[in-house]
Image 1 (cartoon, helix red, strand yellow):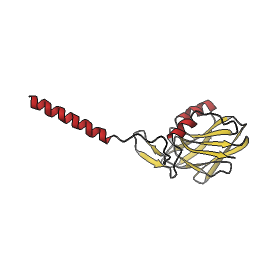
Image 2: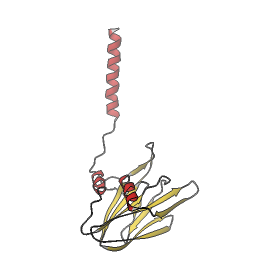
Image 3: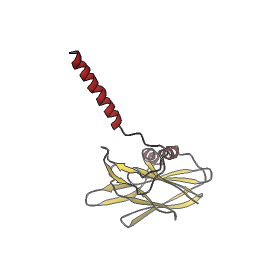
Length: 178
């Protein structure tokens, strides 16, 4: 009986040690690596080609601190019906940034009026954002993806609602467009 208990205890300890070795290390919060969008079950469905800002930069961006010298605009892509499509976002004449579902891009513009656009399937849609230095604005677009068709459009909702969505999104680009 004693030998049986010792054997069971040893097996449990060994299983615990093996399980501990199988747990992946936490991500490095300062690393800039590609972002992978996952299903709610953890299956990776698409990854950005370029590295994205670090987790630390993502957390800092989500404080939504105004830049006293710039108009800060968050472009948020978050919707339950979105899929794995890459959608390119662009602010004024800045280079385009590939987005995935549940991501956002932060632009810091000179004060004034600016054009923000997204492009999918050779279709481009724009919106205009106007503001002064020290202001923070939020705009959102959403996708509806079906097996036979995908479509994206700008969404009109209170900035507070888009801000809440931004808190649940991953920063994939942080651009100063001056």
